[in-house]
Image (cartoon, rainbow, N blue to C red; front, side, top):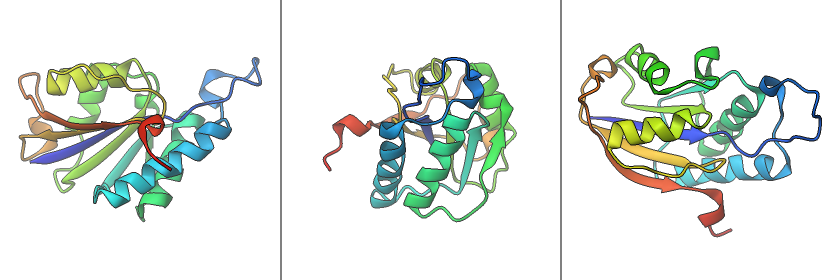
Length: 164
């Protein structure tokens, strides 16, 4: 069994309208929510063995803040492939992941992440900013993840539903 955590980046700033979309930073709410979600993962015993993030500044910063607060102590894997990736691109990236990792966290963007959750679990889930979806997958290797594999959507957490 493999465990997948799917994370939508935290809330980003739109204060600089001329800034390229890839370079938008987190706003104050995003800066607050990302570590909160990391602490949730730590408290739930869900520290991933590998974190793969989009190279977009808002996703990368979300991944960094979550990693620090959940106790993840390895290097983040950054890839441009996750920037606005669709389900097919996400699946390709997952299939290329080393089988040594039992748990993996992807940090990226909608609508691709909501589509990925539904594709893998058969259940639609809303993924607001900084949301985390936990899916259990009945595979031994990430390379086994084909279009027929259906996992179980165990949880979807969002910052708005957490108590402080």
